[in-house]
Image 1 (cartoon, helix red, strand yellow):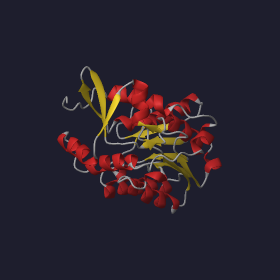
Image 2 (image 1 turned 120 degrees about the vertical axis):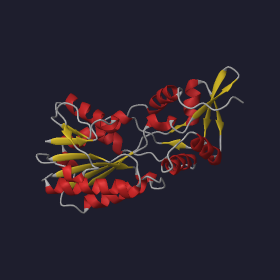
Image 3 (image 1 turned 180 degrees about the horizontal axis):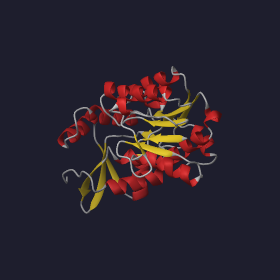
Image 4 (image 1 turned 180 degrees about the vertical axis):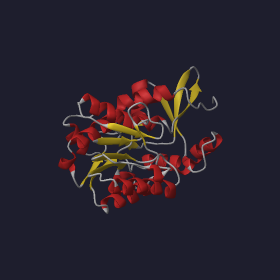
Length: 279
């Protein structure tokens, strides 16, 4: 049996939908399970139960303090091995993201998995095209809108979330064919804020990371998330996430979806978010 953790999340639910579409039986695990799903709560390790699961997709616990996230993931790996899981697939972070503040828990979890007695596959997911809107805010220039961005000229080898779900489903369907592999699932083309603005016909005003910090602080961002958001903006701004790769098309057996279209859609949807004062 295949189990996908974090089943109420957008990536995990997309993986489950992809498996269903391929006729591959799978069950979701969640802290808030819906009908037919199993209860899986990383924050209550004594309650974890993976009995009957042959292949487990471990979607890392959401962003939180490093020690807590690592403890949750360690418990899940240890219980999986105890309960007889044969193959563990882990959704990690692209190697190009090692400068991000959220990278450490992923790298530690990878080591824990590799040292276990299970066979494994690591999916180092690239940056979602859909989250490129997150660092952006807005201002009016006359009657027109202008994007306010801390990303400078930086570009990202972004990936559409559905493509990552499709790639994970391919691995889960045939785990033996991916044993001991670490896949760098970044895009095969880059996307920048200028690309998004060009598609929309909008202008962009660049702001410094210091100005971005003030916007975040004024927006009530939790203390531990502020350095995370700043690190994302800085790493993109300085070009560390622009490297493309070929692992994703190989797992998809075809071309990935257009990340620019996904980013544009997300930016338009994010328009209802923060807007700064009119100049």
